[in-house]
Length: 204
Image (cartoon, rainbow, N blue to C red; front, top):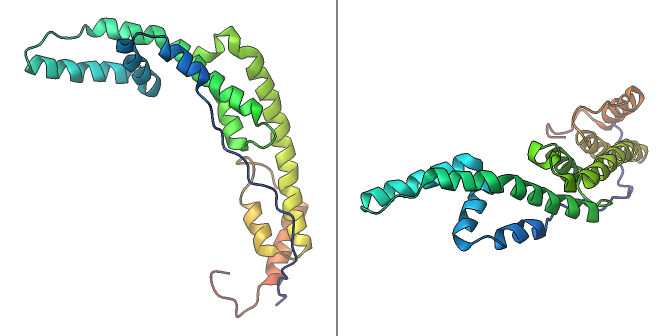
């Protein structure tokens, strides 16, 4: 069979993962009284159910110890009031980090931030709208660019007979369900068939 050769092909740098700085989130939590900060953290990580569960567990223990119970309704009401502000703050931290690294940011992370902008709590806040619109436009542009680059990478690998690399790249589309051009699929099939020999091991 035709042997693949080891001609070099250019490799793009790995995409950066999102690293929010938690500036907006910290500003809200740090401004709260110490006894409210734990409630805010719990609400942000697990929602109102997590707050209710935590209060119930604490009250169960207080009851066993014969101590006064915590007024659950008041704690849940506090969490309910804080949660929209915290969700907006958390999203703003992610969105600002995404905007700062747009050129090199992993497309999945950018897509996740854009999806997060549709959270009803985030949508209702005017402070998020301009940034959300910018990131949605950036996601569309970046998705189209990465799709084009993805297909170019496959074609380049086929051209230098790096068939295994071409197959690997073809299995990693920028977005699941992206259409694969029929002509490129045919070239890839032909290249893969030509690169195989009867004596090749099963893993190849």
